[in-house]
Amino acid sequence: MSKPLYGLVEAGGTKFVLGVAHGPDEVLATTRIPTTTPDKTISAMVDWLAQHGPLAAVGIATFGPIEIDRGSPQWGHILNTPKAGWSHTDLVGPLATRLGCPVGLDTDVTAAALAEYRWGAGQGQPSVLYFTIGTGIGGGAVIGGKPLAGISHPEMGHLRPPLHPADAGFAGVCPFHGTCLEGLASGPAVLARYGASLSDLPADHEGHAVIAWYIANAAVTAQAMFEPGRIVLGGGVMGTPGLLERVRAEAERLGNGYFRGKAAEIVVRPGLGDRSGLLGAMALAEAALR
Image (cartoon, rainbow, N blue to C red; front, side, top):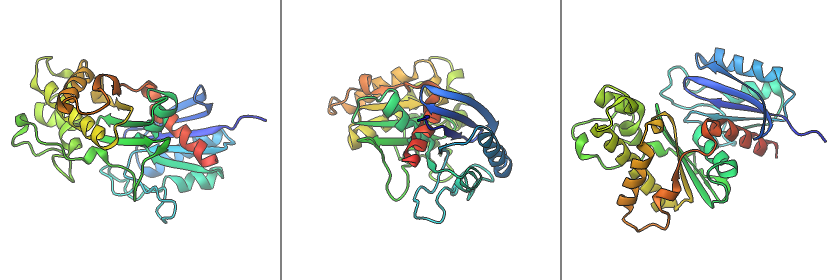
C-alpha cells in the first residue's frame, strides 16, 4: 500500500509556506508565497497544492485567532485579526472544495507544539508548550499527546505579566490589551521603546534584560499551570544572541526552586528549527485523515 501524501500549509502574516510530504523525513516539495490579499493568497495556495495531488489530507497551521470548533458555522475561518483584510476569511472551504480531502486546522503555535512533542525537542515528555516570540507572541500546548483547547484555542501571548520597573509609563503596543505579553515583549514592542530590534541593540543595553524578564515570567507562569517537560521558545526575537540564556537564568530566579522542572533543562530552542510549523501542519493532516 502506498503511503498517504499530505498537503502542508503554514500560514503566516508575511508568507505562506506550503509543502507536500509522506512523513516528517519525507518532505517532497516546498514553496513560499507572499501573504497579500486573502483572494490572491488562498488562490495561489490551492493551485500549488492541487498541482501536487492527489492528497490524502491537508493540514493548516495558521496565524489567528481562528475558529477551531468544528460544530461552528465559522469553523476554519480567521476571526477578528490585526492582519488587515483577513478578518472572517475562510481558509478551509476553498481547500476542501477544490481538493476534496479532509482538512485539519489549528493555530501555528499549537501545531508547532504538536510537532515538537512528536518529533522535536519534546519527544518523550508528558507535556510540551511552544511560544513564538516575534512580530506577535503566541503559545500552544500539548498535554498527554493532545493539543490543549477550551471554547477556543489558547491565547498565551495575551497573558498579563507584571510591568518591569524600567517600563513605567510604557503603554504597550497590543491594540487590545496594551501591556500584555505581546504588547511588551514582541518585536514591535521592542522597536517602539528602543528604536531598534533586540538583536541590533548593544550587548549591554537594558532592553535585553527587560525582554528576558517578560519571557521568563511567561515561562514561570507556564510552569505553575502545567509543569511541562519542555517549554520551547521560537520566533525571530529568540534569535537574539544570549537571550535564551538570560531567560533561563531569570526563570530559575523567579521560580525560586519551587518547581520540579529546572529552567536550564526545560526552556529550550525548537528541536525542529524552522520546520516546527510546517511539520505541525503535517501532524494536523494526519489527525484529519484518521
